[in-house]
Length: 315
Picture (cartoon, rainbow, N blue to C red):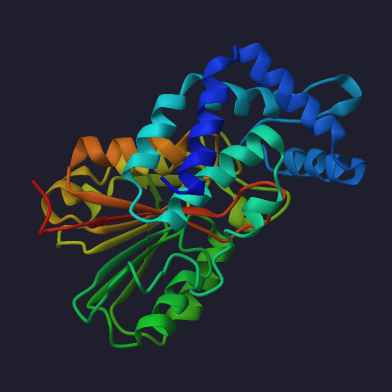
């Protein structure tokens, strides 16, 4: 057992020994002890991005702190399960860093976990790609992930790429940015666990934070990937602002039958980081899990789950 295991196990034991109210009280006290400028920065951030809950110091509303307390206390066994499933110590250290940031407002450990070697999603030691890739990009935005893919692996290292994007203005940029590449299909649809009509709820901060909702500014058709793509898929990336679980359910057939590489953002709430690996495991045993980090050290965002199927070790 190395120091990462020791630190993780000590934190787990501490959380298990406390009631939910004690966990919440500790987290709130830690928040109130950090630099006031960081408190204000976090309050403003959670006001702009509402995935996690709000912090409003003046009114004593610490919804986000309570939500993280509930996640840690009520799901601690799931965090332990995930830790045991992670394929390398970079991933294990990151999981500990996220939990310790939530519990102790530890900024230092999270800082050391930033991925500086490879571009977002594409860890070349783990994500192996060739000219036969059929890559599905959910939340393609302006095509930045596809451009990163082509830069990392080469412009000839794919068979076909599907790009799904929900926002009209951004969709036009997406098409323009990728129009010079062959066999890339841009699709203005949302992705979910069923075919339905929903709405784009536009963010006041950034188009990249637009979400799909029951009400909003622009109607959008949602589909399942299982229904929308007939050919075999080798890789799926998701960054769809909290809709990842529903989109994953709509990919079940492809996951079960074809075992695509899965590159999934797991930071848009306090649960995706453990719930999504559990969902994948329940769909199809044989996946290995890794975590990589591309965010800041104040609050853990831009966390990516890499789920890679191992044909040699699969049941």
